[in-house]
Amino acid sequence: MTLGDVLKKERNRKKLTAEDVAAGMGLSVNAYAELEEAASPIEEWGPKLAQIAIKLSTPTSRLISETGKSAQAKEVEGQCGKLIKKHREKRELGREALAAELGWPLEEFVSVEDGNSPLEQYAPLLLRFAEIIDQPIFNLFYPCGLPFAELKDYP
Image: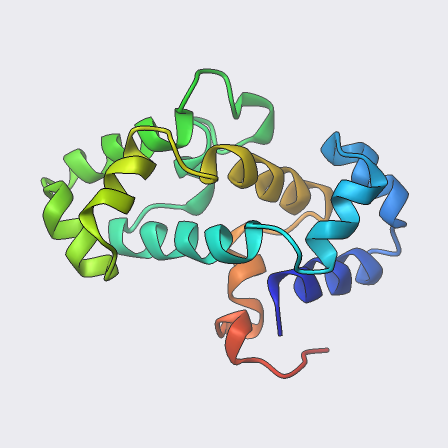
């Protein structure tokens, strides 16, 4: 199963059209379709965001906006990276230590914290989608309590 499958399943569960969701997310229908077709970097970066949230014991939404609401996402350049850094420092973890715990190259993690990763574009979209379907964003990555990649299907 892909993250795109989860988005489509949740959209259908709420009886929403792709056009309605695209409009609510501020995307074109084609751009939203790429998300559901698993044809965007969201497939890689959504689960990475969830990994960071788990390692930092922080609600995923709080790594996207101070309030955890999409309306406050993207208020400043590199906001996700700044929030991730803030929560990492609050837990007195070094960049190297967290990158190692995540199993990521240090350069990739530094890019995230510096606000130079696709998280800056895709994390706010995922938060907005979660609000549209009225679910916590973390549920997108762990539907039924399991990573979506481990699921064949879910009701």
